[in-house]
Image 1 (cartoon, rainbow, N blue to C red):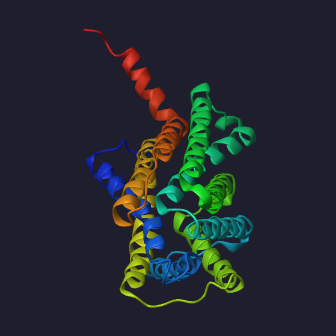
Image 2 (image 1 turned 30 degrees about the vertical axis):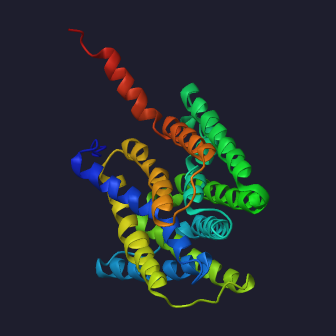
Image 3 (image 1 turned 90 degrees about the horizontal axis):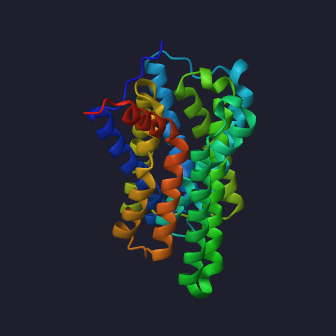
Length: 312
């Protein structure tokens, strides 16, 4: 029996806090990028967060992984998670934190498109297709607006945007693998553990190959890593999984689109990143499109209630 509840004040407050934390991720990575390359930051935070997750699971006497049933999709998820953060880490070398968070959170577009052709139960409705088109129009608007404002540096900035978009695509494919494999039937902490270990194992040698291992210990770097390890990769993800277990996923999904909005504002306020009008227009279109795609169930239910409500 489905015991998941509709959103209440507690869940809404938690979601606002989580979206703030997730939106701050790129800002934290970018702020400390001069002291440590983003991909090295992500590798270290993943390793430390994995230790915390293992410690938590052992303290609760939970099984760490079910290798016989999950090692193949687990490996796929680990590689995809590595690719997501490799693309994101490199993107932050060329583009702003506020732009990267918007392109990263296009992931539901790729998830919806892939599942539409793979699962009959996931076929999209016309309103969702309109959301897909709206989101892609927003991506194009953001790209064009950026290149016009960037002048001679537009090439590198567009490369950063494209890498952030690839990170979003990798995240979208990761969601598909989890949804359609044995990982959908195991505790979320086991899947998170695959992702964290994969990011650490694959990103560390990549940092060596890309000559991005140099670092300088500064207060900003320690603050950034502390936030990423304890708040983002551990507490925030566990709260996210708790919400998904207890509340309706469609309602949570709609609220999650506050994340790119927080990312844009935090990038502008904390890092003084320029926010071009073309990018703002594109970001609004992307967020609106994503709400139509992922929030379709909630929107259709709300419209149905309005139509069937007794007239006074």
